[in-house]
Amino acid sequence: MVLMKIELTQEQLNFKNEFREFVDKEVVPNAAKHDKEERLDPKIIEKLKEKQYLGSMIPKEYGGMELDWISIGILNEELGRGCSSVRSLLTVHGMVALSILKWGSEKQKSEYLPKMASGEIIGAFALSEPEAGSDAKSVKTNAVLSGDYYILNGHKKWTTMGQIADVFLVFAQCEGKPTAFLVDSKSSGFTRSPINGLMGVRASMMAELYMDTCKISKENLLGRVGTGLSHIALYCLDYGRYTVACGCVGLAQACLEESIKYARKRQQFGMGLIENQLIQKMISEMIVDIKAGRLLCYNSGYLKDISDPDSIMETWVAKYFVSKMVNKVAGDSVQIHGANGVSSEYPVERYLRDSKINEIIEGTTQIHEIFIANNTF
Figure 1 (cartoon, rainbow, N blue to C red):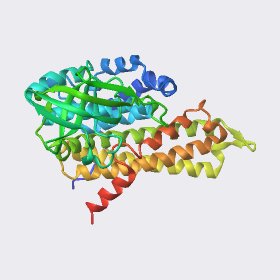
Figure 2 (cartoon, rainbow, N blue to C red):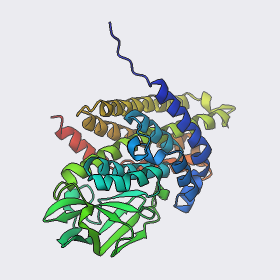
Figure 3 (cartoon, rainbow, N blue to C red):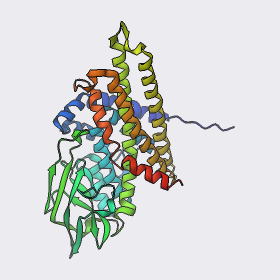
Figure 4 (cartoon, one colour):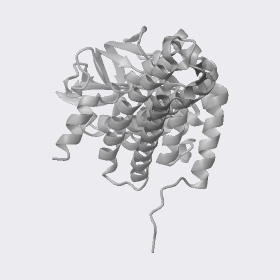
């Protein structure tokens, strides 16, 4: 009899230990600083480069790590445990890299992927606009072919890592069809401005992008005219949803660990808070929900590794569940901390703010509900 086994391989376990050690040493100590300054310390980006994590999703032939999907998920879980903003860098960078890998020309692959694997250039995903978020097909940015160049005009908003990215995957209407382009930050007619004051994930270095007669080579068209959303954006967003989902599990794990640590040392009514049965109930629910969310993510990653088409739906399911789950876990974590939970002296205050962002990015909770229902009934 063959038994079904749900467990990590030894290599994946080794990666998990490596990633956790890196996060504890390099990411966790700087997370509050990132949040306060609303920017990533350049040193942490250099550390990510040194460990080759920016190339975690890129094949070895281009200088990347070529991790399997579950290992990619573990990396994003651990980074999410340490700092959601650091995790967001890997998410958008990977979305651009994988889109080039799948849809790019050989010239585009050889030009961009080795530099993205090493971290020499950073990628960012530019789809949303002031009037187009979930309704992505309604983007108004326009691209017109003029000789050997495309001329882009438009305004993008909520572009994660837009303040520091070197290459942007920009979606625009071309010949009346959504189309994808690679736009260098140094392109003529391209400017950007930072977006500050976010509720959570404050160091994601968001920016607004402006293209005023922005001139790019016609070779910077990615894929074909009209495949921007149906092929490229949906493929990118699937990777984005997966890494965000895994990051949610990590963030929830951070909430759990802080709650247990606090409840063990906090004394109330002559006993440790951890001895209170209502607190035990909250922590028990955290543990169960996190385990369930982690298994949903592992299942999604496994299906991606075997190229099962059901992986797309299972990624929607995982992201939907864990983005709601982490908000409950973070809320309970703050509740366990009492008044201390709303103080920036304790990380759970930041965790609560960061958790809410996950119900919005890579598809809102409501968009997930619509998609899951429409593809089930």
